[in-house]
Image (cartoon, rainbow, N blue to C red; front, side, top):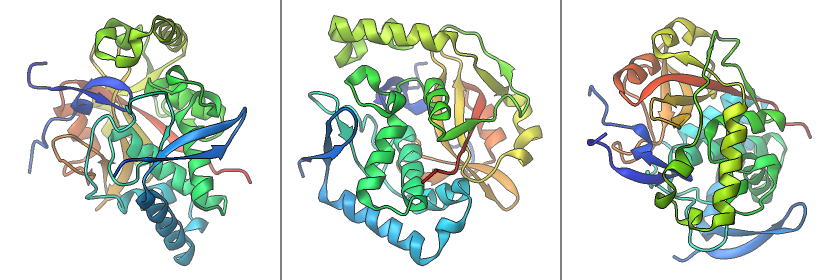
Length: 304
């Protein structure tokens, strides 16, 4: 572990989103959007609405909203290639609120924003629709109710978004095997999380870990990824499983086929910006010692 730096990434204390180098080769303003049970405070910059509307206008102009949702998610994700990687983009001071940032990304916010924009485009909406979809994706049952309501563990992110009809976990049908490891990484490292200094929040996260530990989890071991790659589609959400004790997922990205090989489009640390992996997905997972397999979630078409 000594060659990794400890960073806050998408709400989890992770070793730089698990990403070593490739082996080859203004103040935020507050607005509110309506949601149940009440208004949600949003941190955003003026550029965020401009970027979102530009992407949505491009989708409409090119008629990309007629593509399957996964393909559209991948197309939108590609427009962010080259955008800077910044860790801990959701860890703003103060109370939990919806953070909108289409300027810089970590590994999870890259996935969330690409998917939320694709869903907004499919729904025929604009920036407000994007924000509502982002909130639905990021928070348990689509309700923002403090720091514990954020889907910190990505296996729960997948399960909860499947329950909401946003994705479908296809890991088991791809031949995934069960993972019964207990999940407790956050509370085992509570001193690294500012929010967990609050005993009430700590207890709620502990309860979340108990629940997530009981969820059935399946993963595709690294030595089997190549054999199932042809069943993975552009825009499928790839979650790299962790060998770190108590942690389910250490990195995320989007599947992308390049020259008949399956690659990962993602926001790594060392690359410093959003990129398409230089080596195929199976090869890069095998090469990274903190990762031992993948979970795969397929975006579902939104219902109007």
